[in-house]
Length: 291
Image (cartoon, rainbow, N blue to C red; front, top):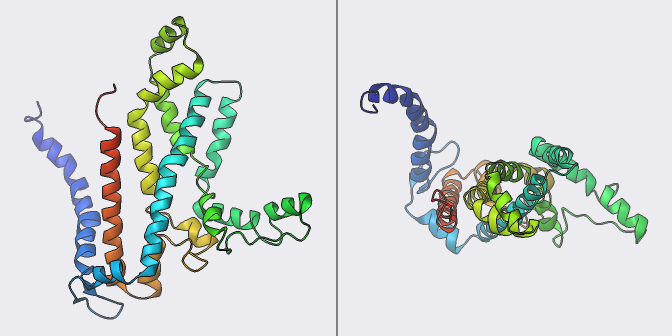
């Protein structure tokens, strides 16, 4: 049957393959090739071998800090963020009277653009009129004025909290998987006297392994492209305290006019993402049957 329809399959796949080659494959080849060059606007790429990569790993403090920040955010997003979303999904799956309202409200931050969320937090954490400082002044020091986004001690934490708790996409994916668990499993467990906690711990969570692994990959890799909120709140500052790899690529290419060097950072970022995905696939055995 497949052999008989091979011509139609090829015909329908061809536009997608061509689009992938033009948009992604060619771009990746150019990215990788120009990472070995010195290239800026108005000048043709000049091959310089591994010089960009040598500088990256031996003489670039901003790159090291950006890589560290990116790694920390990937770790937090793939653990705490996913754990929050999974816990919320399990609570909502019990379908208490508030579950529809809570599910809708929890989704709000995910349907607002990153720029809008950044502006919202800029207002909330404003040192002069922000709600957080105002509440602190009401119940504490009347002169309290903390510049949350521009203080070295609080900038990284403040930026992290703009997205870490809002795991609505994870919650929806987990909820969908929970809904697919046969009701007979729950009934059998209840007949055997299992409590709600034991049902969730020994039945629900083990059966969510594949989808949790998928959520870990989606959440972790989302940090490899996070730019909007950081640009709106700190711009990577103070100093390089909240700079991640996408922000560093943006600044190196468009502000420092160094396309060849920024492309070498881009190659590193792609490699980082591939390694992360492969590790998660092996750790969660995504695609294999449930035990």
